[in-house]
Image (cartoon, rainbow, N blue to C red; front, side):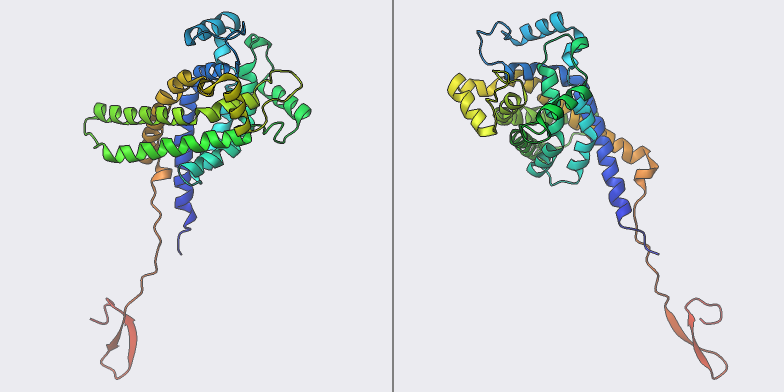
Length: 317
């Protein structure tokens, strides 16, 4: 009997999903406060607004003073819930741009809920829960591109561009920079490459991120939709606020996705290696059992009759 070829693929996919999910969860828990701050900067429209943050430090102080410590973790549940299906999709997708596009399809509804919760400046105890806010969006705006899937094209651009640059740069540079036998130096090598990859990718894709936050966040005039599509939103922001407005939130984004990307890749690689070495369920190699063709020979016995017998039979040498 031959072993099913799907077994090895399923084990490898499971290992990648577990490693990727673990890496994503660690990155979210560590870096989510910076994501909240990034979103707040991206949705504020002018410096004269009394509610606008003057600097990165001012944003941290204001959020902590008004909303408390848990204010930095607003909207954390949607990305956590999206992490496992996102990793599953990326496992079965083409690397780079393809993985980013397929990932965007899965995460966009979660992003709509996340941005809406992050934009809420009330105290953490006063804001709606994740599920109640999602139900509110579906009831009021529906499931379409003006409801739970608004900002879809901007999310496609953000994830597609980021993954294409991030993974393309990481694996090319990783192959160029020689592996170091010293564990500490090897850790620093991977961390540095991941940090640089995340920073470059963040700088390139942030205009899509700003457009996404404007579309998915609260509109300037309640009841009127100003920001509808990705590139039209970019054009509007550029015309009204200047080119630098398309780079709002860049510093917290780099602070999050630079070190966060490095942490994510390191956790992924070490978790993957640990699963490979310590979990027997993932270590069994799939080998196709082949029926050995039994060599047959003609055995001539003392009688005149001849008949085929297996090689190695004690009756025939």
